[in-house]
Amino acid sequence: MADHGLIGDLQTAALITTDGTVDWWCAPRFDSPSVFGALLDAERGGHLTTRPTGGTFTTKQLYLPDTAVLVTRFLTPGGVGEIVDFMPIAADDTASDRHRLVRLVRCVRGEIAFSVHLAPRFDYGRESHKTHATDDGVVFEGPSHALTVRLIREPGDEQRGRSWVDADGDVRGELRLSAGQVRGLMLETGAGQLRDLRVAEALRLFDDTVDFWSRWLAGCTYDGRWREMVHRSAITLKLMTYAPTGALVAAPTAALPEQLGGERNWDYRYTWVRDASFSVYSLLSLGFTDEAAALGRWLRDRFDEQNGKDGPGPLRLMYRVDGSSDLIEETLPHWSGYRGSAPVRIGNGAADQLQLDIYGEALDSLYVAHRNGLAPGHQGWLAIRDLLDWVAGNWSQPEEGIWETRGGRQNFTYGRLMCWVALDRGLRMATEYGRPAPLDTWRRERDAIYDEIMQRGWSPRRQAFRQHYETEVLDSSLLRMPTVGFITPTDPMWTSTLRAMEAELVTDSLVYRYDPAASPDGLLGDEGTFSLCTFQYVTALAGAGELSKARLTFEKMLTYANHLGLYSEEIGLTGEQLGNFPQAFTHLALIDAAVALDRRLG
Image (tube, rainbow, N blue to C red):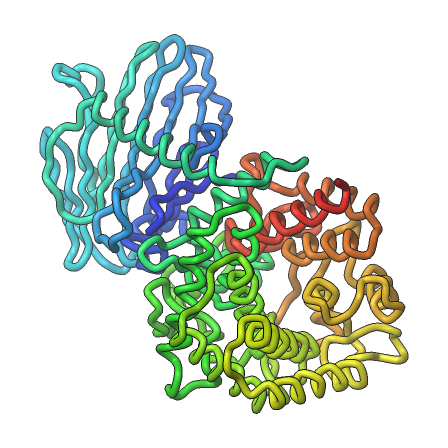
């Protein structure tokens, strides 16, 4: 799972393995059906594979510095070759069905022969297609999907290779290159014009893509101790942003397991209100105000659209990148799953859950945005006021909680905490900026939540704040209690909670969300440590003044990144990455921890 890099064009993204295989690509959007899905089924998923022919080879993979251009290198006895993969960025942010994936194949030294196997499988392998091959390229055409493949070559290249269509309708080929020569392919979604793409034209696309990423990253204001990792996390978050709406997907993948062979296999190709809200804060801390503003507008639009509609609350838990909410969960029984981890799920049944914490996260991000000059207009404030009126009247409901448990609703302490945050930030915005609001009602409910958490969320036996009122189980989501200002980081109630968490949830600096054996969540199996929580643990330690411990934990956590600096959702017992990959939640928490720790150390 960790042996992958990510490329994208701000509307879709693809995963590429260390041996040069594109084994995951959904188009034309992150949440569209797959074109390549070998990541979840090697035989039926589809892929693009390019690698040296014959003998053994060693591979290395890196990003071109400060970009999302991925370079996979092959070292063979006869020569050194490279595959350079990237997706050109459109000139504007208009949603489009046409997306390009460019693969440059280069011989760096000596001579090298490559084999190519191009096997698309549309709609998660459920849609058949016909293959139309000419001397200029190939069109794979199905009833509702198509893929055009243009050759990157020069006149007279026929002697350098050959290609053919096999019995399955796949295209196979061979290519021989000498030092300094560059050829390749450009894949384009949709049925397009078949003509050669000259090498110089492909290199201009490469230069334009490099220039886009370099210019974008130049806007980052972070220059602290962990600049390289923060920059890579920022680029990764940008890659998971759908430019036409500003929405951020939780991950570009679906159904990657939290436990190998287990059933915790969820589709993360959607925008969670929680993730989007956290990202506003993270992006602002790096100086990316445009991206933060776009996410803020996306959140505001969800307020406006949902107001008055049926549902568990004023906001849905998650949405598609265009703001729609049709996330019906289904399984793909014809796919075997990643390393046999079935079922393979697409859609997400948690979309209709009641999770009260999302209101606090949304209001906290809007408050931070407000203080950074991104204030809502009159209609925006009215939508915020309506939402807070709902929170004031509904915060005491049992709910499913931040971890989307499927074992029944509970009075989760974290949900109450974030309702307190929602009302507190609403009060601050109203008073600091002179906005009309029912201040007495909001203040009364905010204070009632505070009293309830202190009385019912506190476990005298554990000397710690607990997951929900009917348990003694601890929950690492509560690491945010001092971060949001509910309790001071040196309060004895908090320091004893931190010690209790360390005894129960922390293992060699890695942090579990909670103990599912002690607090059943309605699902079979267990899971790894949760990378988001480990980075939030760093932030909590820094806030408590335990800087040496915070720094050591942070540095150790950096060693769990893959070779490109990317993280999935969880870390297994043997250090393997688990869950969907890469995960926005983890990368934004890395940014927050780096900024907070660097500030404290400074």
